[in-house]
Length: 147
Image 1 (cartoon, rainbow, N blue to C red):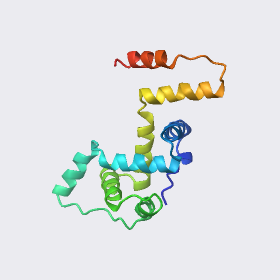
Image 2: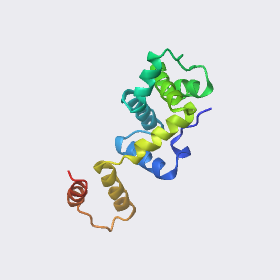
Image 3: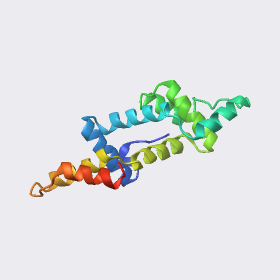
Image 4: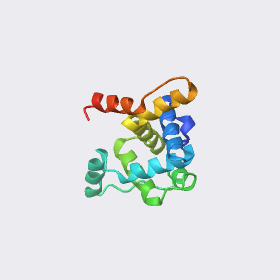
C-alpha cells in the first residue's frame, strides 16, 4: 500500500513540507493532503498523454487497487483526485504510489522566496543571538531569482 507520510519522503523534501505545514499552522498530514489536492487540480505535462490515451479508448485504471484505496480512504482524497493520479501514473508507466511520491518530492523541490525565508527564520529560532534583517534577506533572494 502507498505510504506517503511526510517522514517517508527523502529528508530534504520532508523538511520543506514540514516547514510549510508549520508556517500554515497545519499538521504535516493536513499539509500533505492539501498538496495532493493542489497537485490533482494542476495541469501537468503528462496530462497530454492522459488525454491522448482517453481519445484512443484506453480503459481507465482501476481505483480498486491498494494504492488508490489508500489515497482515497487514508488520505481522504476525493475519488476524482485519486482518478487523476491513477491516470497520470498509468500514462507515465509507474505504480500509482511511486508516481504520487515523485510528484510530492517535485513540489518540495520547487522552492519559493517564502520557503527560503522560512529556512532563515528557522535558523534564527535555533540561535536567537543571530541578528538577521529579514527584509534585506527577502530582497536579496528576490534579486537573486530575478524578481
